[in-house]
Length: 241
Image 1 (cartoon, rainbow, N blue to C red):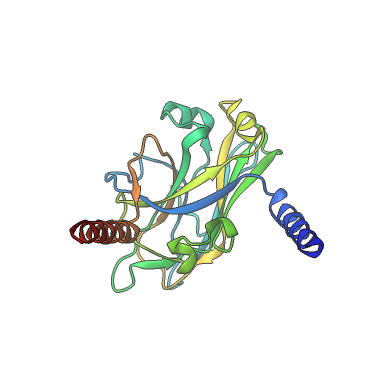
Image 2 (image 1 turned 60 degrees about the vertical axis):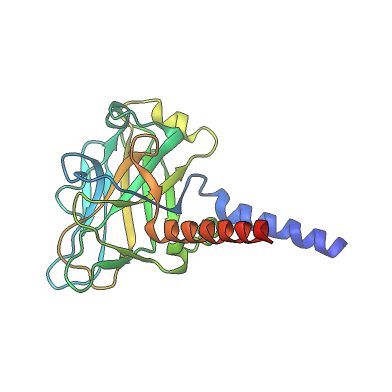
């Protein structure tokens, strides 16, 4: 019994060491938004990625240096940092802030593999102070999601539905960030999105779970409907018996 207690304590310490340095985090819960008309000009996009030439992978970033946006890698011209003023003008707040991934893949390969991405929250106007929120397919908080089982995300076209990722803040992070309308969000994809990238830009844009139409991902919804149907069938069968 004592050995088991020691083992549990060690596991808790290891988990704290692993995730304690990165307080804010991003998770995927098999949700999408079915909104349309969400192309450039209608959304608060952060990072838009578009591969160069014959490349089949995409990676890049848009960050803030204190006076202007700095793009790198495959970041498209539409990439930008997003300010608190822009978020609040849309009615977004820390309690239900989300980030949505929209893909624009065409042809016989309409999918990409998404492994990880980072949102950088600047808590100073000169860009010197910030914290990161990371989505990582290997994070135990994503265990059981469809993307954890298979990192493949499918393109639905620019301005179509997107994959919804939930942002969780810890401690005073949200208050510190939303305290100044000039604070802003940048984004990074350092581990390339791969699996034959092509055509239009892949876009990460900010949203709000209470504003955007968030629903279960179609495959997950199908499982829920099937499970519900089987449960109802079983109940009717027991009642007849």
